[in-house]
Image 1 (cartoon, helix red, strand yellow):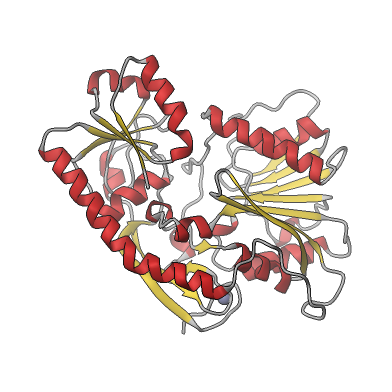
Image 2: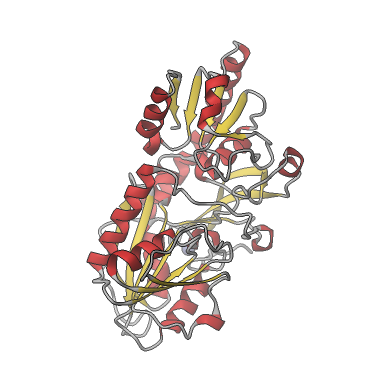
Length: 395
Ligand SMILES: [Zn+2]
């Protein structure tokens, strides 16, 4: 029987299915052959009627690869970098991070941890199996070390004043175990602050962002289901908020001094009733198939009439968009400003990832923007190249 990974309830409803999606959408794939023959898995997006959590009931952790081939940085975008700096400063302020020990779980190549340590004068240890030394420069006098491994039992002797974990929890199927282990590792240090950032399921489900539903993301937390998870694993929730145009959800928690479940803790304002989430799930179930048909028809009609269309964004959203719609040659390629991605191929569909400068010869009629938050940045870049295609933000 399928059970909710957050609360273990069996009140589960599968409301959206996609077959044969790539099990990895963020790998750097050097040849089209390698890209199109990538393993596939299934999506069975499921809603827990007890805690409001959404998850992929068909996810198999063993199929997800997080190696040096895993490329997830957004650090080539000025918009993202300024958000990242603001987030680091906000955390330094909020948690008084000066001269502190900081751990980042799932630190990627360490951009954010380096910022926290450099800007707050902290000492950091970052954990990530996909960490690649040298990709992010470490300024002199900044005390940061990295462990290219999953954070687990063997590392719990690294004590910290602050534990941060961004865009990682949604990749882990046994979240209860993960958060319980973290609580155990913190032990008897009630002043340790914990801060997790994940995609906001209220946005993914409420805004019907089907391009944000992909295999590696096995979990989709709403504020309520995230708070529920932390509380039931021995934390008190201090705050819950959204950022990055509501795309991200952030939770701040501290170890609970009361035994789990012994004390009624006040709910955070961001926590919605499960019944409201159930309504959004119901609308997703009914509306998304219609939206998919509209997109398919639009793209196919445009391609038939000779319009040259590219995507802007060559990451997981692009892969999810193309594989969910079943789009092939109608789209000419996917632009990405990350030079490490240029010249690689998108998982399963095999679309080529190109640099913006190639658009000078492609001269697209239309650019589908995979994340509207970058719209103005993209418009400026196209303008500088004297190109004026129609910009279609995904919606
Ligand atoms: Zn649940």
